Length: 426
Image 1 (spheres, helix red, strand yellow):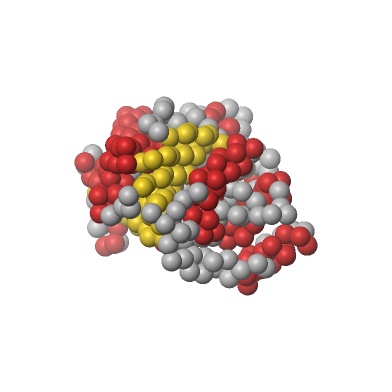
Image 2 (cartoon, one colour; image 1 turned 90 degrees about the vertical axis):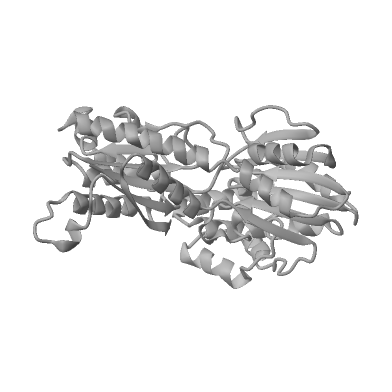
């Protein structure tokens, strides 16, 4: 294989990744949202999610001492230091833990003490569903974790997962905004869900819930989930359908993430094309589809007028959030599984690279943001004595990519606007 081409593709991929993460930091978007909003006299702050610290820092810089009190709830190792007048609590993700309950208790206590002259600035980012949790009376955190594990394992998408777990929570599905009443709630949300649905971002703690009891039952039936009779009773309780104390601003989106990748690729001389910003399917199937597109780009033009329109170097960009139905006991994430699947399809191609990453820097329960593969990746796995198909079947994409230097590791990025996948062709 032409190692010079492959090396240049990897160098370009790293530059695109760096630019995308830098351009999608939430500080400027938060600042603009705050400047457009007229606050009450007394401002209190609650920030939840993987980008909670970054968003809270932006609010601190914009509002300063106007913030009377703040609570920041984020994932372990996602805090970047102290913030004036704010308590920072790190907790479990994707599985809630005791710190989650402690943090939620403090947020609930703050909310219950708010009056009509107060306003809660609520900063929400992806990961908030796991990081901001408190069970309804009669339920335990273990009850919620059990249901959540079922949903993650069966391949349910993020909207379906949120639809179920929000109904077991005291602080989701608009119920937290109700706790804040009579105070106003102004929510600035960094969207990590397709369609930017307010009631799906972090399970909508301050948004009216558009889903119904029947919708929830349909998810249970669709995946044949064996939930207890007790859980079923809670799922049949209706959620708030309107809130008179809540306002919203959505900042950031997966489409903007894709557009950032397109600009970064163009700067490097690629002809970029955002093919899809709402990819929502099995990660393995997405990898196969993406590799088929890569092969089509690579194929000789011949007399095909459509192929003649494709000018290299070329970048094809996808955004969204795939899912993984767990069948094995390996380690990985949706972006890593997508890339490992694509590696099988692009095997032997000399001028193609595929990478996929989660914008928050954490792909599944791993320390990698995603993965990267080229036409030589499949052969490298074989040289290591590893079966690509076997690793896929065991959902062990992390160890497969790790063995061939195919993991993307960024650390916590401070943002969270879903996933981006890119084909680079020269």
